[in-house]
Image (tube, rainbow, N blue to C red):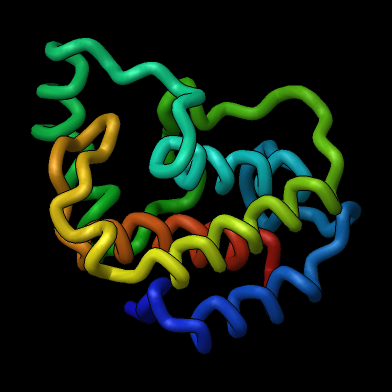
Length: 150
């Protein structure tokens, strides 16, 4: 697993994003490229912005028991895996806006560094280690860039 907190990792991911086009077709799934970028931005919105509500205590417990190991673990995501409602993007999005937001979030992650994330609370999973945040951010983005062949 590459380290999302390193500038060289963000540079590599940005190079992959630069190959992506608004009209690039996915190899699986229903989202178009702009929707996929907006979908990937949700993970960062949850970490950086007060935009998404915290799941209730019962839902958080269920997420911690049933989803945390999938989201924060090393095993790659399966294709067409069901996603949480907050991550479902059905409206049309502007490709360049979403791409630039994603690159900005990745750069902010590097600027804040691992120490900022070590013990930081996730809306869904409670306190995470920096390694878990790294896995969650990197694995998710890598999965979707692979989905679009970049």
